[in-house]
Amino acid sequence: MSNLIDRLPPGPGGSKLLNTLQVLRNPQKAFSKWFERYGDPFLVHALNGPIVVTGNPKLVKQVFSHSAAEFDAFGKRALVPTLGAGSMLAIDGEQHRQERKLMMPMFHGQRMKSYGSIVRQATLAKMAERQSATSFQMLDVTTAVSLQVIIEAILGSQDEDTTLRLMRLARETIRRSLPILFFSPRSQISFFGLSPWDRFLEARKQLRNAFDEELSRRKQNPKPSEDVFSLLMNAKYEDGSGMSSNRMFDELGTFLFAGHETSAIAMAWATYFLLSAPNKLEKLKKELASCDSSDPAELANLPYLKAVVSETLRLNPIVTEVLRVLNKPMEFAGYQLPAGVALAPATVAVHYNEEIYPDAKAFIPERFLERNFASNEYFPFGGGARRCAGSAFALYEMTIALGTIFSKYELELLETRPVHPVRRNVTMGPSSGVRVAIRA
Image (cartoon, rainbow, N blue to C red; front, side):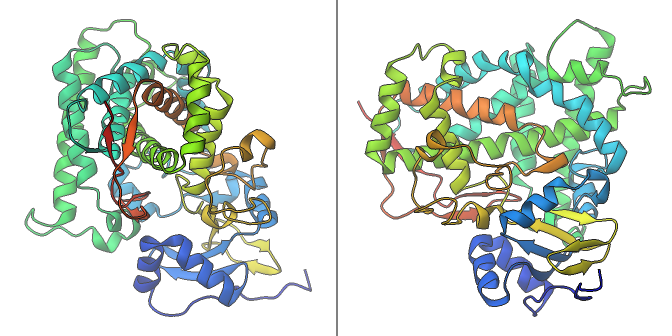
């Protein structure tokens, strides 16, 4: 302890707003610049507080190996008003452990596999709608697929009007979810119903009303069902208590918001990478031709298809940095960090580490056939005790949807310039939406 340097790591000065905007705009560029200038780790002062960033796998392992009880959720002041106090992304400690234990079984094992036919049918339906289009954005298709899958997984076999209404309200809520609203409480300002924050709240209120109506209807006419909505209605915590309607909405909203767009973005990126690399696409096509592509279970087990998904998530991870707030002091890389400082393993730094991933900027799915990567070397869904609870569901959905698309359709990439990541809200997505056409 006596050898510890009793100060925080060096890092960029400047305003918190400017630092935050640099990370929002291009986290990989900002982190690379700051690593080169200040070393690893460095400290950046952002709108959500001081953050110590690392791209060192050994330090990442230290963060992920610590108990969840030592960390609080990051950015709660901004997240609670947007996602709700009951969202798993905004709760800490024992409460988070119990919520995770309750939610995890809904997206794993046999129950998750029951969603396979939903994914396949939604993919076929949304691609068929583009059959006669001259061109279209793949991100529009994958977003529609993922949103429908999420809604159907939540609602189960409901009438079409209910499904379409919830999809419309969900789209509007997401459209109103500007990036800055999730990063700074100061942006959450009302102004006679006209501010971005007012419009987001109104869209979220409409979505909440629709969920409340569905909840009331189900309570009046209870029927056995395995959809997520019904499972949450009947779920019990360790003390035997059930989930409140507020918490249920917060969790369903988080699943809807965080679950559908992240998968959609990854599938659009995978399409771009495959169509930009004909040799990789041909290899995938041969694998798809060797199986029954109408069977979701077979698609989900294809090695090269899974490697394509994994490599896509390496190049464009769901989260660009994994944020945790210390609730007690911690020794870290020769520094004694106080409580209140956030730790951020930078996914976009580790995933582009040339020592782990030679030719790191290239799309090479074969990496994931040749070796297994440790959880501190590859963590597109975060890591440790707060790793994304829906990661298995997301991987399953991506694999089946992409396998269905590329086994049935010949696509042509229409982009005339490189596509790069841009901020959508919490996530980064392709700048163009990935414009494609269906070949005859």
